[in-house]
Image (cartoon, rainbow, N blue to C red; front, top):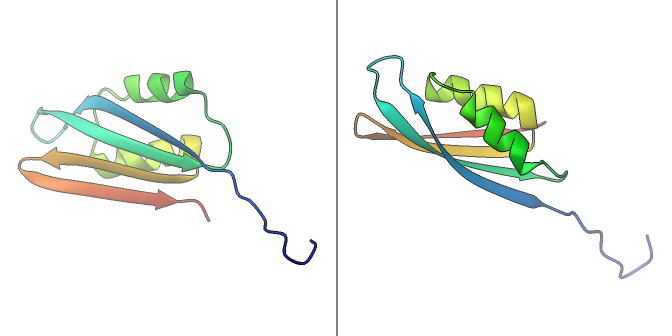
Length: 91
């Protein structure tokens, strides 16, 4: 790299809201998902992956989606009045 040149990292940010049932109490939980990725992720793939999650615990859902898409993932949802936030980062 030449002196004074800077390296660039392209970052794509995808945000999506989806609903899944909590296995503990049957409540419908609204999840706010954000994925930051250096590679393109097709929005259709995000929509399909989240639509297939009919039921699950927040942390398990985070693991599943991170395994599928990688990158840096952030999910926030409220369960029984408690806000739960998960962060998954690729190594």
